[in-house]
Image (cartoon, one colour):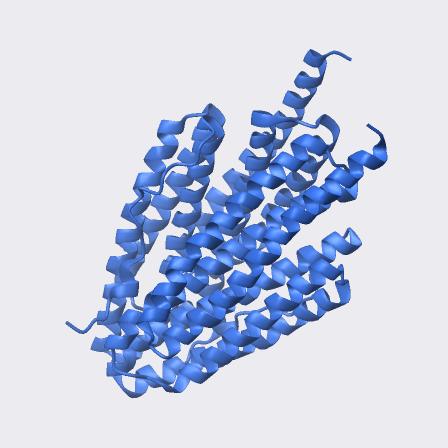
Length: 236
Length: 236
């Protein structure tokens, strides 16, 4: 068995694992869109589908973990090959968590359907989720094409998501102060907005992981951070 | 170089990595307690220390990642040895996230110090954080002693944390409806309570990982889940 044979066996293994991850990524993208659609249109049936679909995402992560461990054990990859396999583990762990957040959105659908509608924020929420889904799509494309510039672009776009979230937080405060009957719904909607913002953070971590795979270095922490609501007192 | 020599070199590497993780765990435990103390006593200075300390935690995770990759590359561990190394990666990733949540608590201290005090929930918040810190301590002990029963115990205790969170959520709704001037503070306090509840979930994931290391199998999902506020409409 010569060296060339060993490395092409590794390449085949890696391709199979990457294919699983890309599949997982596609399901998570759909979960983000469906989860946000369910909750903003109060579509209880769609929400139920998202919750069921999360099981499939979790199973895929487990399979990726197993395949990666098997590949490491069998092929004993070193340096950049090992880095790629370990990165796939990190990326799929992030995907799994984004899937959980999408399921969390879906979970709130039923209770929101019972509450007094506060429809103002629905559009902004959907727009935010759509942007996060696009960022995820670009991150996966960047991974497949080993495109560090595209990953860097995603990283910068997280700032927009953070800004959307900050604007929504202020809006929720206003709605609640205007009319206490809005309080419960706004608490749930705030929870949803924060979940979407967290998804954006996770996608950003993934983009940084892609940059690490391509360049061998984690990007400097030059990224403008993040949730400013920690500093919003609402009392000016 | 005989087999015995190889495996004891692996053991030494693993011990060094595990020592780093236990050190990281101790810092994260302290961050949970200090973060919750800072925010409940509005101690801005302590909050600043927690924020600075998070950098040390992040650096430790990076070092563990590097050491683990080096060990895998150098020692090519298989089966249960490989499982242990990969688990350390997962455990330290969870620790890093718990550290981030503790830093998030600390971040809210300043804004809360400026707001109208809503002191009722402070005690419950501190109690919740204390319980999560204890769960983390037991999880790390369970890992070091390879004690699956203790890890299972931690897993069950997460339910109490979830109940504390659910009770707090209801309390916040009441405070806000009673007096709209409480709204902003309660939004921040809810955020804090949710962060502590998430820390509990992460510790629970860690406990499951410990069970996996010891027994080779992930526990069934028999654990009673979790955040019930998704179903609280507040309109009864």
